[in-house]
Amino acid sequence: MTHRMTTQAAQPLGTLQDAGELAVLTPNEEPIRHRYAMVVAFSSEEELRRAVQEHRCAYRDGHTVQTLNAEDVAHGR
Image (cartoon, rainbow, N blue to C red; front, side, top):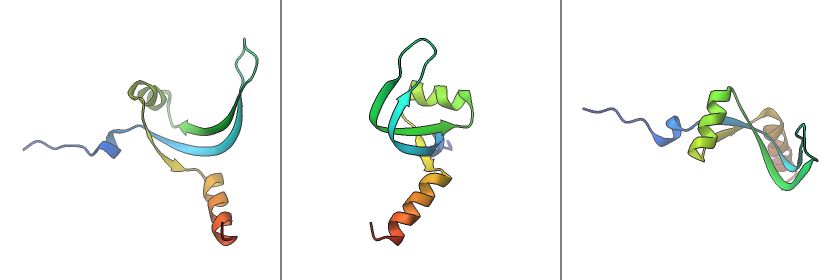
């Protein structure tokens, strides 16, 4: 019998740190602004590379996002 891993478990896992307008800074370029963006952080460079190579990942909400969601619920949003 062959054991199959679920798709979710096989995907690289990141943490949603923040969302909103974002300016990307690189050493040799002007800032590039993205009006609608998410910051997803990975626990290792290997996980980041897998996410980029596979063009997908799963993520969990970071502490700041959890707090914002709780505030929205408390205020009926």
